[in-house]
Image (tube, rainbow, N blue to C red; front, side):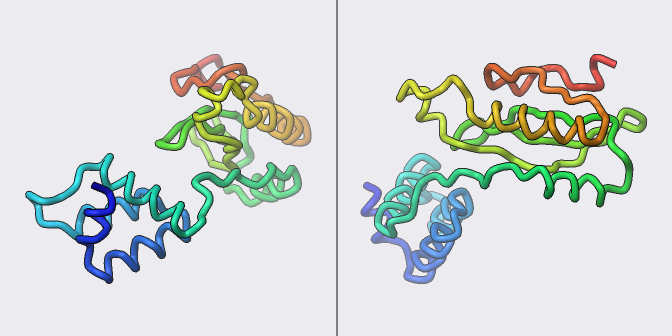
Length: 176
């Protein structure tokens, strides 16, 4: 069926999908596929995503690319450029269609504000099926580098759920 969908796409949509795949814009590529069809003939999300995955393979694009290692100097420079001094550095889990990742934030309590500093994504959720997680290497990286940044800034470091992904874990300011 995926080949039928690909074959039915106009050339301009195919070119756009391939360009998006080369830039690792999977969801945008799905959107292009779905928008190329009339309302009644529109492929479902799963079918469109399957076509995009096939394009990744055909173009020899990796389906997943890890984020670069967190860099303490770059993070310190990002904090220095903020409009306010943070009250803490916080690591939080988040997730998307590829799986879990950790986001580092500089946070303030009054007023409540958060500034995204970096993302650590070092694998997909396929690791769960392969027995590779836990441990979660992005949690280890966030704890080490985020903790070092907090020590450098002389502020607390918070990571409510370093052992397992939990996007409902309490926030730093919840415990204040």
